[in-house]
Length: 225
Image 1 (cartoon, rainbow, N blue to C red):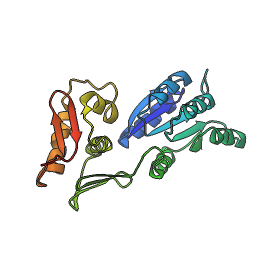
Image 2 (image 1 turned 90 degrees about the vertical axis):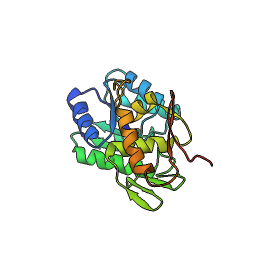
Image 3 (image 1 turned 135 degrees about the horizontal axis):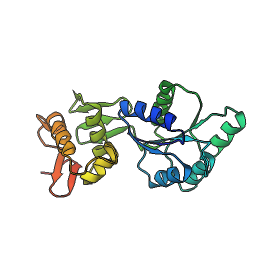
Image 4 (image 1 turned 180 degrees about the vertical axis):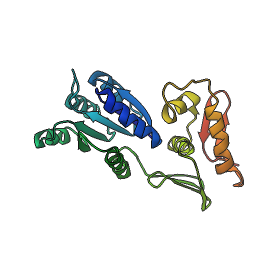
């Protein structure tokens, strides 16, 4: 899962970033509205945590702009002001949820999980490729009716491949979506995790589903005879 956190208070943004990373999110930070809007419009996020009281372009303006641009990513708004008018305004502009500061990280994480379960930004919570089933909500993977246990990172990688099933995903795309944006593109971390996935997802199941397209990237698909 990828999350964008738009918050100008460095202490709060680092607090959220640390918690989300521990929950296996890939996190990108923006400390002002202009940067937050640019990143949000770039897409690719599963959720956005947006502070409303930003310097310059405030969170209300960011929210209005991304919804006008057709970005449907779930947005949780944060603010130090707990007034009803602010909540109503944010929700009317397209916010999916609202959390007043100070807040517990456990509550923020629970609200993110609830939003993702609704499928606002996900076409489906279940991905099926041949006899492989990936249940995003429960984080359960089965192939041929057999349960497959994956680490958090392995699951994130498989989910990414599953959502792009049939499409070749480059190493750069996988690094951006599953790992940190500043990950060294020459690292072998993808190769290591792909090999682990193959041992768990393909080994002993007959036809492989994870394929290497030499010089391009990886694809999850069922090969015909």
